[in-house]
Image 1 (tube, one colour):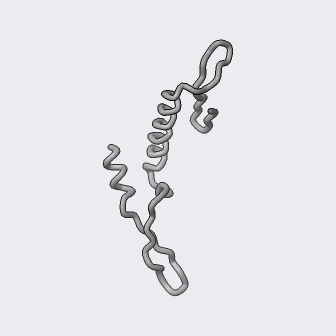
Image 2: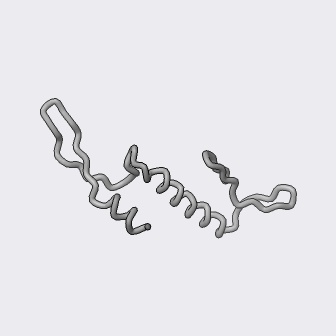
Image 3: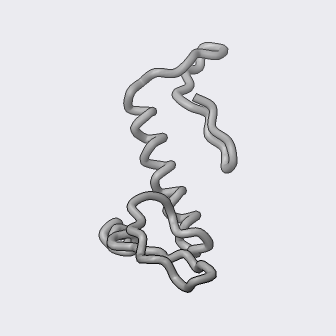
Amino acid sequence: TCLLLSNMYNNNTAQVRLKQGLSKRIQISRGCRQGDSLSPLTFVIVFDLIIRQISKIGNGYVLDKTHYHDVSYMDNLNL
């Protein structure tokens, strides 16, 4: 799965439409494809990896004798 996602984002280029025609190809080296149906899945996979790494570090806070590493919601994150 990771190889498939990696291959989708390797060697991507874009062109800008100008009055004179299309620009030269521009290499895209960062970011997610906008409007790609896999963009939300890619975000969730990376987000999950980050949360797991944060939890392994062991930092966080204690509230009512319970230790919290992070508080993650679908659209929010508190560290």
